[in-house]
Image (cartoon, rainbow, N blue to C red; front, top):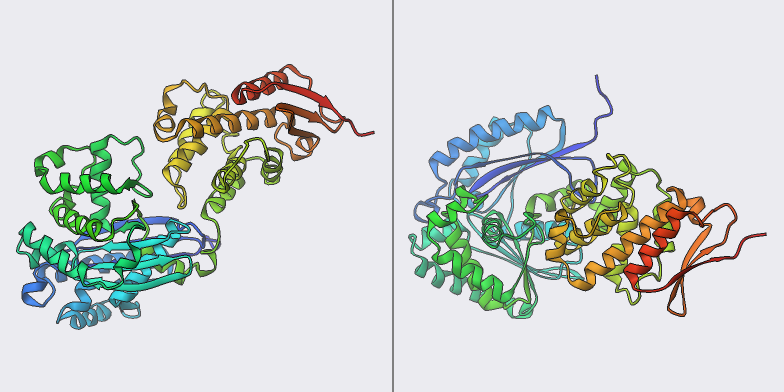
Length: 496
């Protein structure tokens, strides 16, 4: 019998529209879901008119939650908790429903979140997925819209509004003009929103994610990842206008269209359009991490939140796929000063690239560059925006000798500015040179230095243990000089 199974935890998000079980493995800055299943219940359908949970949804919930309980128990998930949100907390028969669940699953914690608690969980989820997020978080569900102000100092000013896509549809009796008026009234009543005018708007929740998926498909965007998908204000306005007027059949034809969400799309677009009008954000950022990831960070990994998620992912990949845990730090020092006028963000990405620089070491040499490119571009892990993915994957493909004209680099070409493209190629060539010099060992790389002298790049030999005059090393230094458009030379300053 296996006794060293990693710790697992599980949470059920019981919402107004759907219920989802997520089982996480381990304790990490980057939550690792190993099971994720959703069922559409529409518990909140008709709540506005009846004041009660949808009867058909209640019966389905009993069956689905029993199954989820069995799965979590079989997977040894501890803690395991059910979080109920807007529909259950607002329904007259909500307490009765929860008691029935407790009788059916004795000992399982079932918590009805207040609107403020729901907003707080979502905000922590955004902090998990987007480090240093600063602005307005909007989490739309079936029953409610949670708004919370995120700053560097913490979470402030949480509000919950009856603008979930199911409830808004019910309140408006399906009329989008009425829905627009209701959304304007409810959003306009939030007194603190003027404080966040012009800041970033972070969108959380399944209905908002559906908008992003449709827009990604429509625009033929080269990276099918919703997390960190970013639009400017005018782009977001245009998107909502398109979604409010596009015929359903046209949306259904888009590749990957979330067909089960299409009824919700006009109401989610209405809410977003009214938020844009009120807040006028500098940009809109979609975030896939919300309530469930917030629960994980609060209940499973509270000490991990201050960590850098990009660093954690990179170090883990280095340990699993690379050959040395010490070389990356030497590479970081070795490439210091190579790229002039680095911003703190560029310096951070260079450091992450150095940590990831050997993750293709065990791949087939004929496919190493391309395999590494796709591995980094599409890796699982929070904290990486799309530009970072495109930059890192390009730098590491070049490190593995990718020709920069090959077709598989097209995503990076599309997403990166010309300056960012050039910086990635320079770093990739520098890493390629470093591995030629050292054979992937820190002790040999420490015997060399790369530095600028009067606009000339100098590869300095400081240890007689390293032979730098080989043909491979010479070509590598020449390629790096070509990428920098700078002359290069060797210089020996050998130890006695």
